[in-house]
Amino acid sequence: MSAPNAVSGLQARANAEGWWPVEPTMRTWGSGSVFGVTISACVATWLFIIGSTVAFFLGAVEGTVAMLSGALVGILLAALAVLPVTARYGIDSIAALRAQMGTKGAYLGLGLLGLSVIGWNAVLVIFTGRAFAGILVALGMMGAEHTDLVVSITAIVTTGIVWLALRSGAGAVKKAGVAIAVMVVLLGIFILIMVIKQAGVSTLLDAEPLAPSDSHFYNWTTAFEMVVATNLAWVPFIGGLVQLGSGPRKALWPIILGIGLPVGLLSVIGLLAALAVPESGGDPTVFMMELGGVTGGVPALAFIVLANFGTVLICSYIAAIGVGQVQSLQGRMSWSLTTLAVLLPIGVLAAFFSHPFYDNISMFLSCLGAAFAPVVGVMIADNYLLRRKVSLHGLFVHGPGTPYHYWKGFNPAGLIAALAGAGCYVYLLNPITLESHSPYEYMSASLPSVLVAGLIYAALMKWAVPKAWLTPAELDA
Amino acid sequence: MKTAALHTADRSEFEAALAARIADVEASVRPELELRSRDYLLVTVVTGVLPVLAMLAGFAGFFR
Image (cartoon, rainbow over all chains, first blue to last red; front, side, top):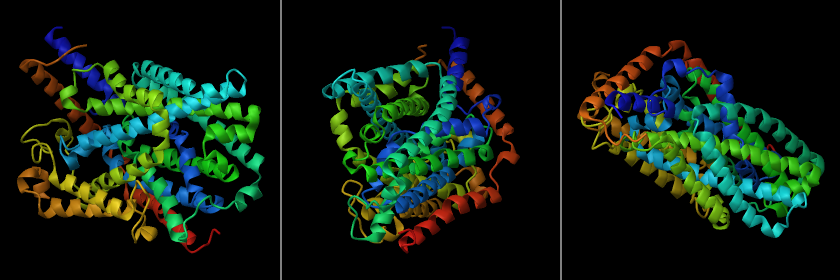
């Protein structure tokens, strides 16, 4: 390959794969497109799991209020953290994190992104397999004893199809996003009606929580906390969702409405179903068939398959962009190989470890709050307390002497603050056992974690960081 | 495409292209699409203050 081709080839890939800020002429998505992609990325069966978990603590009305509140607060914090910078410049969330964590420290965000993507997508792929198996069983095409085999085969096929779709880049994501968003919303409404119609409104309203704590405050806060933590984990994805949008104002409400409301509202389906059919444990592949029979259940399961496919497609695309931010890999891995590297662990996990993974999924989801809340706190403090002016040049040009090199590519202030925030979270709420320490029952764990990380970061940046680490503009300020 | 490493001259050209992109992007930032105080106020009230008030009402047993 000739030298000019090597350069132009890399440049073309940087454009197509989102390593660089998106070219201004390519940022054509309006609010509708951002909303469509966001909502289709968000609507997936893990919402049912969250809802059914809340059913252990609160009944229908209280659980709905707590989940909606948590969903909105969570997405507000996530949006405040990343939206101003990512939507202004058309960049990925991981790139934006370099300003706070350093050019190498931002790989922490990439690690969190990987943890989140692999875990969530594995859940979705497993559920896709279970839903598909449920359809085959309901139609009499196979016995229930073959479910595990179907889950494994479906996992391999689903990740294979997603990989093929991703090879065409952002186009496939946009087309899939808009179409699936419309379909998913319509089917979601259908499922909600089916749940209410079959179980009865009065039964649902009167249903007691499945296993509440003695503390009324603990029940409310835990329901709230689970959804806050879930939405904080959208931080690494938001940049990818909005980077083709034309600016922050066009992206703010699509993100809030596209994630906050669906998470709050569709989780209610899992809550209501778990209250109506407690023995289902909130598993949609079980309660859909219980409530709807073949005529209602099979279309609902088909909804799950479609919704999950769209989510896996979009989240994997964003994760692949995140991998592309690793400078040492840029130009060394083809887009096909990058997407394969993202999808392979998901497929393997879902195909061969579906049972052990599924049994521990609530633990995994709880850990997301402890991981993401501190990062959100640091980014919010940087945007609004310190009001640092982001150097776009510094986000993309690395090495000694560049704005975000700090100490060997790491910003100790950001990393220390994130660790402190995580420690605060774990003290207040152990994500493995859900044991809590006061004042968790009045404050939750995510909100204090955001606050602690943010304040420590601001204090360290203000008074402890060597002046040599700051940009000239910051020193002038 | 396998481009394990760019030569020094190529790297310079690549960096120049990146610098040009950064300049383009910075020049294209539209102030009218930046978030303003009233955007922050509205979104904070709707998605921050109201949910917290709802939680406080729930603590008080309002939704029982």
